Image 1 (cartoon, rainbow, N blue to C red):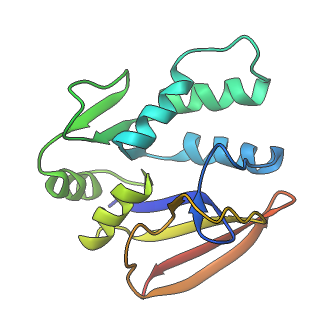
Image 2: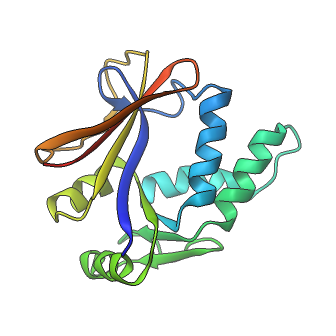
Length: 176
C-alpha cells in the first residue's frame, strides 16, 4: 500500500514560495533523490503548471538542474484539476472523483506518492488521506504568501527531525 506524503520547503513563518527562497546545493540533491525514489506525485493545477518548467531543457542549467529535470520527467504524475483539459507527458488528469482516484492509487501502488501544493494537500487532509507531513524548514521569514497548511490540520505527532544541507531542518509528522 502506498503512503501519501505532503512535503515542501517552508519559511519559519509557515509559507511556501519557490521564488523567495531556494534549497542549498545539498538539499537540492536531496530533492533529486526524493523525486527519483517516489512512486509518483499528485499535483494541484497551480503547482503542476509551475513544475512544467522542467519539461524543456535550458542550455544554462547546471548538471544538478538537468538531473532534477530528468527525474521529474520520468516520475509518474497525477494532476487534480477541474479547469485543465490536458496535461503533459507522463501525467494523468484527474478531473472527477479525486478521493476515489487517490484511494485507488494508495491501494494499488507501493512506496511514496508525494502531494504537490498546499490547497490540494488541504483537500486530502480533510479526507484523511495524507499519511505524513514533511516540512523542510528554512531560516527565512516571508510575512505573506501561500501557507504550508491551507486550513486546519489534524492533530499531528512529530516522528523525526533532521538537518539537510546547511540551513534546512526537516520535520516529519504523522496524524496523531
